Image (spheres, helix red, strand yellow):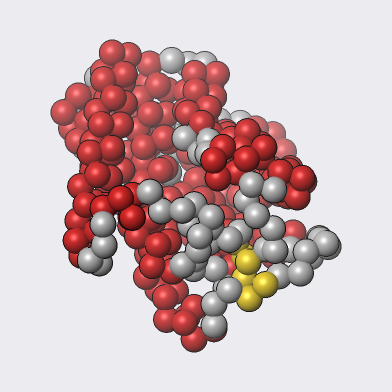
Length: 304
């Protein structure tokens, strides 16, 4: 089992095989630029439409105070990630002669791996919650309101995490892996970009770079799971379950904390309090990555 844990998968990675149709590096660079442009333009159109829909000024939605919390703001922000889906789907077809569905990997396999990752995360995250902390949780929403919003919130988190996985793992990673053998390029580079995409010093203050480190470590774990198991399912399930825990169960007060049942009694820019929590989360992330990897390989061996 230990040897199998580190061994590459026996079957070809169909995501990478699809990416080999047009693997030229210039296509990837142009594709990333198109993805960025379509995302930015999509965000502008989305927030403009939302400002008219809810009857407020465009600037009030676009430049909402990152330290405020409220279910409406969080739902609006999560919904904006639908615009991130456009770029990868478009450039896969336009530049790489591959089906947009190939960005997911084999769909039936992806579906199974997604739910395995969710189950493993849920079990290990529950155990990690037993680690004592010095913080007393603060109730944020009433239970009835929280339950009423839960189905919509789960759907939007699935879109948010799926969009990020499609872009960073489904598109960028698979195209780089089709062109380069070194994981320093196909795993580390997308993970660095993923981490930097979460750099928000105005929101997280002195803890901002620690958060980049944490998301970068998650990106490396997600890159390994995607490459090893041939779909974005494990990384997406890991990402989805993590964000459900961090946004719907216990969250920080802030723009993305408006749907949480409980809040931590600290501010996101309180570096003294945040850094130990981020470092603990990095350790938990690595343990959960190992757990997901172990269970998926065990399932592979059990079905041979």
